[in-house]
Image 1 (cartoon, rainbow, N blue to C red):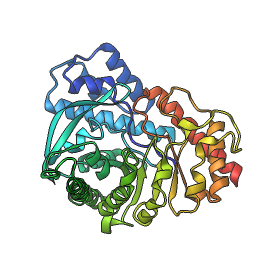
Image 2 (cartoon, rainbow, N blue to C red):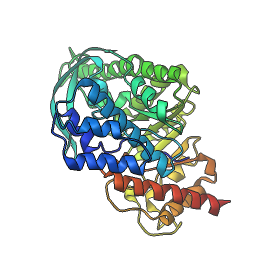
Image 3 (spheres, rainbow, N blue to C red):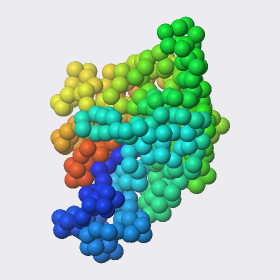
Length: 379
């Protein structure tokens, strides 16, 4: 199975409209170009964009619709088995959910990586959902998608780890043994509330809408090695009795994955797929030897577990278009290690939002071609 991890770049016309910036002729031509390439009539979108500025709420809803539609069509045209719209409905993976959860107060922007920023918040009261914040986008995407739809959501551990704590930690004295223990208990309680009162209800709402592929994004999972157990606890609490009702995957990128083991075994049965980044640390040489495929060592550890292996085969931090032969060899190497092609899902290392649609499309096309080549070779 092939899929894309989550994010795609937002077209300039979508970004400018929501930031109240004037639309240019180039923006309109870009929308027309992709509409034609993807076989979609975008005349309504073009008429709206020709207003240039002053878009109404209804205008923005239609602009968002077309952004979601075209992004989904891009993944379908590339040949992916499971699709999404690349987070066209969202600001980014932290601010979008936090804005829809009571009990948080935003303070300001912090830098995450490169020149990317997000608004950081503090928990100031017990978190409670304002709304099931992924249902609307699932309804929109599934209304026009021709392939099964996957919905990614930021996991409880990352939302907790990326937030300041001004509520649970009250009364913890700094520099005392009692304070240290209080901080540990506060962390557990914060994580429990986010898992059971925020993530789990969102999962249940998606399942009730018909969602069958749900991805939990946890980039913070391995950043505190003494909290791997808490991270696994949060996965189990978030899925709960919904295990088996949908295909649950977890995406963790650019980490020391060895820290997850053996603790992650407790998530078997709750989580089906563990998707890691591999291509970013691999060579660009062809071949299936250990020396050529040195970015894939963790597969030897995963071999002894029951998880579906989410195999990252595209480096999302470069415009280099991986040849289909390179994708083929990366997949064949995984098959050689795991001895079970059915345990492999193939995707980019991470979301492709830092690449243009042109580059993302070419990368994904080569990925699909490489997977087909690997299938023929392994038969």
